Length: 295
Image (tube, rainbow, N blue to C red):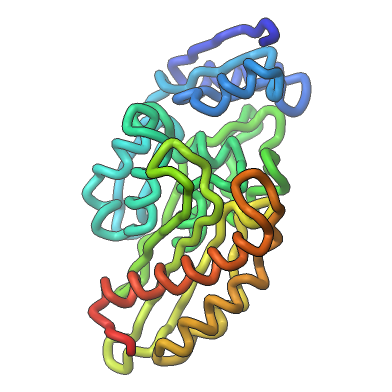
C-alpha cells in the first residue's frame, strides 16, 4: 500500500476544498465503508494520494422519501439503514433485496450503495435494481452539482464518468409508477460473501384495468463490462398481457444484452443460461407481487 493522506471533512465546503486539489483521475477517493477501497489499495490497484472520509458530512447522511421527488439516499448511508428504511421496502423491492446481499451483515453495516456505484464493478448487487427504477446519482464538486442517470454513469470495469474533483453526494430514485413491482436475484456459489456470477433486476408496471404491461425494465449484473439494461427483453413485454410464453421469450432476449466472459466463477455459456433463468424468475416474482398469475 502506498502512503496517502486521510482527510475527514465535516462539511461539503471542506470536502470541496480538498477536491479542488485533485491532480488527476483516482488521486482522491471517497471513503464510506472501505470494504472495496481498502482491499484495492493494499494490492495497489487503487493508489490515491488522498482518502476522503465523507461520513461526517451531513448531506452525505440524508435518507428521505418525498412523494414528488422520491427516495434520496446520501452517499454515506449504509446498506443496512437503506434496507430497513420503510419507504424502500414499500416502494423499491429490488433495492431492498439487493442491499441485504452486499457481503455479510457486518459489511452491510458499513458499505453503502454509493460505494457500490463508485467502485463501478460490473457485479455490483445494488446497481441493477437502481437502474430499473430510473435512479440518478448527484455528483458534487467545487464547480457545482450535476445529476447523472445511473445507467449512463459507468464506462467500463471500475470506471465511470466522475471527474477527478467529483464525488457522489446522493442517489435519487424517482417514485415508482402505480401498480409496479421490482425484484432482484443473483447466483453465487456460496450463500453470502461472494461475487455474483450473474444478477438480474426486473421491474414491471401493469395497467390495473387491462392487466397489460405498461412499462418493463430489466437490468443485468456480472455479464458485461458494465451493468446493462436488457432493452430487447423489455420490448417483448411492454403493451401486452404477460404470459408464460412471453416470460420465456423475454429470458431469451435478455441474453442479447449480455457480453460475459469466462473466468473462475463461470463460463460464457453458463452466464448466458443464468441470465435466462434469473430474468424469468424475477419477472414471475414481480407478477406475483402484483397479484397477477401466469400459466
